Length: 430
Image (cartoon, rainbow, N blue to C red; front, side, top):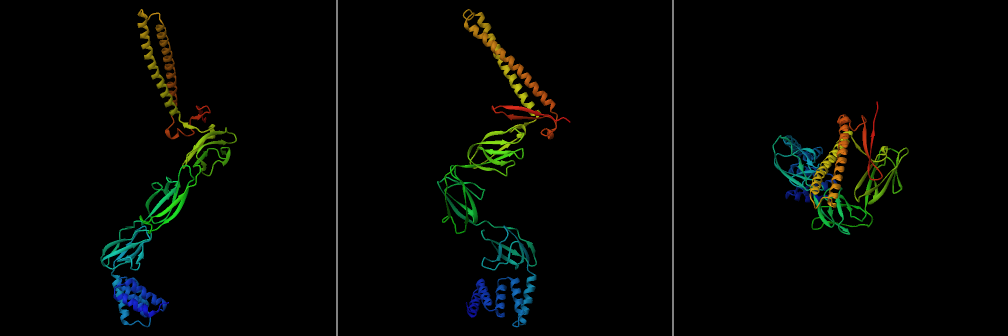
């Protein structure tokens, strides 16, 4: 244990040389070893010289409460209290909050921790803001006596370290903290000081993660190196199955996953899987789904119509049929024009000696009959399909807000097992 006398002499020497933080430390150590009124007076003097009047007054009050206090000490206390009452009152904030505020430089005692309101000496001063993990910031500012103000928020830039990622094999994708731009290992990048988590993926290998802590000592010249050996394996993705009937059994590759609704996506090897859904009173549904590595595939199953369906309004189907009918009519116009051209060629052939009653006349006649028949078929089908579309469109007079509801006929297209679609309608009668 250090003795009081050397600490007292050390503190006086530091104070004489203007090394105020060192003088304060020596006097406080001596007072902690053996409290003495003289030490309180010395500490109060240091705080006063630092222009930290709130602490100087608090310490001097403790001194004047002892038998060692004299009239001069009490007069000094009253004078300091009067001076402090004229000091400006400043409200300080930082982004992020929690920064220690000092006057002059980072060696001085902390005045307050943001957000805070404190009294500071008038005149031109330097405010020093410091927060672990962030770069210290200094702001020169001039205060006037008796002033009250809120100082503009001070933004503290994060302190950056450096990290290097290396993977075996190389080329893995690394994502920091679940966001940001992915990097391809090996790479080095600047990153805020603190704890981070990296997700590492590489096709043909099992995904993994690493949690690490970067400090200010990890510079670009001496970065923190993270080395990851990836384990070979099939890439995995996730499958999210949504079924419109609670209690329906969901199976993947004949393995029961559970009953609807499932709690969330399931992890599967990437590639094709057979999905089967079955429920009492409904036709079982089955399809092949493809799971992509690193992604979530969603399958929505509607058992009420026998399988997944795409709901279509009556007017939408009408528009589609009108479009198909129009296309057929255009086709009829094209084949009709071709038939007329072929008929002209046939007439010319019959007047020419080298063409009449030859195989060419027979071929031209066959072309005329074929194109005329095609035109008739397209014309009839186009008119019928377009007319049906017009009727459906005219009958669908529901407002847009209820077109997909339960009022009026509901139409749906459902995939069939042979690769086509079947149309179904449901009507509600009041």
